[in-house]
Image (cartoon, rainbow, N blue to C red; front, top):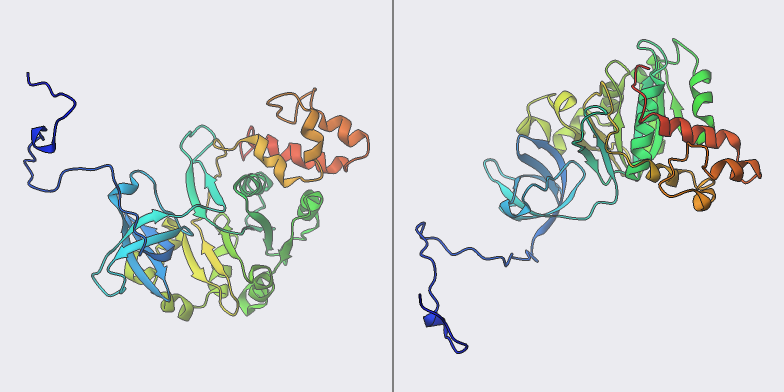
Length: 336
């Protein structure tokens, strides 16, 4: 075997032949400093529609990103053909750091978390007051996911003509969550859209809700069909209407600066990925009281320091009850 001393030059070093005839592999990756900035609008079977400037561009993820996936709302860097013309394809080479994430698992036993939306400012939780009956457990789970992911929650209660909102609002009153109450007539004549739009201006808002609550009707009212055509989103990539059931879709808010992100209807909202210690950050009046909690305190056990903190008058007992109710949703099934 040939051995090399200290004074070898490049000609002395053997290189493995490259049978494919292409360039040898290297760990040095290009920086793509001239890459264009874009925002992911929708994802469909490995193809991503991104907004680059004022035009939609179809792209795919670069191989060097590995298993890292881009989702709706992601800020990305793109290279290649950015014209947006038919049959062109750009390449996403970088996914920028996210300011927030909405994540869920299929159920509480599923260890695989799915990022649904990135960089949203708030989560609009749409629920009907009747037909179908409200599901407070599902609302609680959406709230926990919002708090955990850094999104501000917004309650949108529909069909107030069938049932009053008082009982449901009382359940969430101590959480100080902004809300909008609408009726079927208001959804049809546009009044509901106008009232909801006031909470969306200048923000990126993800909408969640289960089937029949009026989420799609509301989103359609917030984003008229002509606005959908301007972005060239759905028809060119996923087929008309498919996004309502299969993929999240970001749409520009009509009449205001903001984004509406329509997500597929949910039957369940798994929280297997949630770290309960992060939920306390949504309760700034209670968070200082955790300083004396035992290590890895769940904030719902006999030695939790929050009980003494509240008993000393530092916070409202109703707020501690609300925190523990939300934390308990991770242990409860939605139908319980």
